[in-house]
Length: 488
Image (tube, rainbow, N blue to C red; front, side, top):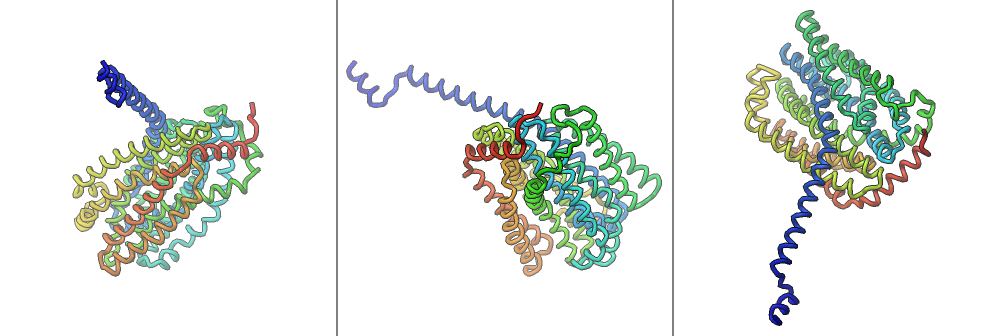
């Protein structure tokens, strides 16, 4: 008896004690699994419809490029350059500026300040419309701009003409993006998904009518894209203003003109942050246009970037979902909940990215048939498939970390990180490998992947070292400052 008691006092456990401990550990595991399932359900409530909506919306561009590609190599290159340089810049800037709503609307929704969501959206409309007007000269002078940056004359001339026809699309961004963010922060992504599906059906019909039936050629493909995006704008606007959001939409208000300067500053930080990301790989296409045999090189990299952009809609949906979940939890004062949401989102997105990475490796010599039947372009795409696969796996993590930044209001900090890693590391290294070491498009892309890798590591360190309780306090202070007392 004395010997048994001594063993227990020295740390030796009885059979009953070991069973109790194992049961305790099992209970903790079950609680963790249950927490993961609950958080995944909340996350996918945003991510699922957002991914569908983004994939469908991006498919409009893919359909347009595919029709242009079958018109000819020059047509595909010109619409790719117009999309990349002109439309791509305004798209990235205004999408980034609209993401300020993810911070403000998300935190206000978590804090139950519902009346401010409609006011924030109206402020965003005002700011983005002014931005759209200021960007118009870029469309009018697209041809000389493209010529100045080294694009071949024939390519620059046709891309400039296409850019002029994309002006209606340009103005649709100012209204569509705030509407999407407004609904997203209320967990009403299913509405955006439904409208996107309607727009896709309309786009298929209009493309068949304009391009196949009426034979309007390249200009016809641009007109179809304009029409389909505005269909989405009017559908979402009709839903919001006709009673779909009774708690958050109280009608047009003069309050939207108050506090515009503070809103502009946050929108500008958001715009710079996401525009730098959006433009980074578009610059890859631009640099490729200065290589020898530019038409084939641009076609090949455009196809790879189109596939990458198509798949990127899923990580971008996780960016949206993570931003909403982090903002909601911080707005509700739950810092630990925001941290847990981040972990679940990064893990899930990484697994999905790995699946697509493997798929690209298996279909390396087949996926380009969607866009072209040119054997030269197909061969060039095949050579780039390894870099495409690596880009996909890397991009499955980076947008999620950007979503954490959006939900937390770190846009200005991340903008500095993006400038340093993308434009002082990635692009210079890409140019060095592409031209000095004569690796061509492979070298340019490899260098730019290195910039993305450095950026991802820095964002990961910032996120890991974050004091989430402090961020929750900052979010509550921001909500009180910007929204004032609750309204009935």
